[in-house]
Image (cartoon, rainbow, N blue to C red; front, side, top):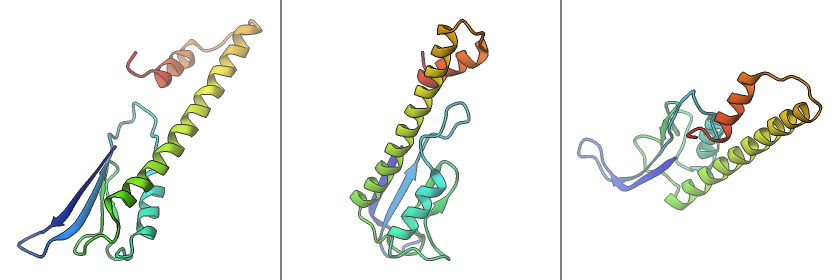
Length: 130
């Protein structure tokens, strides 16, 4: 994920305003580590310049601070919020991987058959580039 900030973003020769952009690599091949809608909601609640008409938003891979006004958040505040969401997502993912590993270990220990495709999927989730 990337947090990019411009302290004096201007559009069409308008006044410079603080602008933040958050981007992520978005793919269906890997699990998402971030609750993207929750992140947007939290940024909207935290940013005093966000309104229902002009708030944080964008696409499934990039969001930015409200348009037409400067963001009321500092770069450190945005980065802190993103970090919290990323940390929660990674922790949840690690727990799920542990659950899968324990399940397949129990099947193997008791000699029960298991789905090889599911085992391959687990290997991909644990180490997608291996």
